[in-house]
Amino acid sequence: MLAIVAILLGLACLGLAISSGPLGLFLGFAALRALGQGSLPVIGTLLVAQWFVRYRGRAMAIVALGFAASNAFLPPLTQQFVTTLGWRGAYVALAGMVWTLLLPAFLWPAIARRSWAFSLTAPQNRPRRSKQAAMQTSPPLHHRPYARRASGCSRCRWPPARLW
Image (cartoon, rainbow, N blue to C red):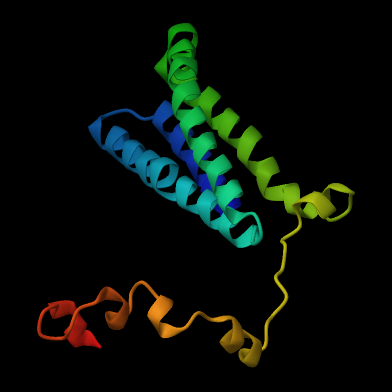
């Protein structure tokens, strides 16, 4: 999915570079918004959430820092591109940058499986627990914060308790 979105995002940048007229600009900006701001953050978050199990919180924090860093880094870079290359040349440069950065990220798992780096980045799978072991380690009902008994409310005093 990442490769498809990366290729389409680069094509959308090139489409904006050669657009002429309001319809071309509208379609190009719509494609940039849908692919760049809509699809890429979702795909990045989904890939990290599926890849990491044990340190998922840390990995998601690094992804969030990457989003913030790109929001800080890309506007001045784009402004520099527009100043030196013009707006059409800036979109061509951005298309090249998208393809240069995102397509190798798509190929990383295939490359990593053949090297030592795979052991550092492989999905960490949890051992499956049996149903009996899960039942023995689950907290009793009065320790669950969402239970009606733990909230100290009766059905008549607390309307959401009617759902139980």
